[in-house]
Length: 281
Picture 1 (tube, one colour):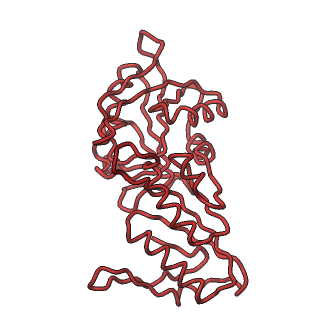
Picture 2 (tube, helix red, strand yellow):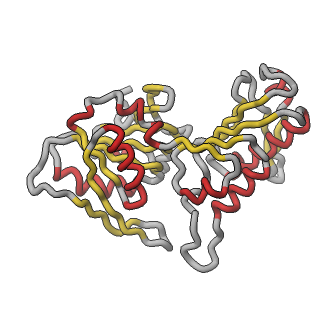
Picture 3 (spheres, rainbow, N blue to C red):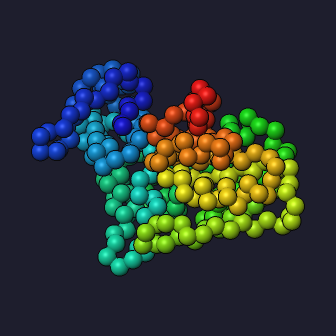
């Protein structure tokens, strides 16, 4: 979905019988309160190939109508950021293709939230990165932090988790997972935890993306026996492609900063949403 920030009208979209996307931005531009030579902010929530095409068409139509304006893009989730290397022969470097498409639009600035990989940030022109330790501030403010421990779900998340821990003076538990690069399946999870008896601590798992949720289902199996406290999950980008019910009874709370459209949530703050796991709200 593409949103022209400051306009109360969206573009009109439809699909031709042949499958091609088409749109008209006339009403959106007419209701945007900006000068002809001013600057415009666009938010792009790209959840499908059609969404990506919509962004390209929107920018093309926008510049045809207002060729002198400067465009800023808010792109919370960078698609294909997880495909940041060629793991097997015959595969594309998908993040390079995605970034080339965004760079084609020639934005003055592209803001990305908690990008999965530094490769994507390196490939984007004029990128501004909003890190997870900025996005998590509203979440941290909702709890008594002294009795909490952060959990890094894998080696890739350890640097981000360490920065959050240093900012809020929290301890860290490091988990590790083994993934089959051909299937994407997780084949094992371990936790480096120095205590031999159950502790009374709340574990907060922090990660950038929850897709199907397998990482966190496996992780709770090894974390739950270690503590009598709560298990809470915070993910920046909440895809939850297998639904949220599978977390009910396994996690006490699940939060996200950027939920996908069909994910049942309650807004807690500007960039903080709590998931409805069991129909309580």
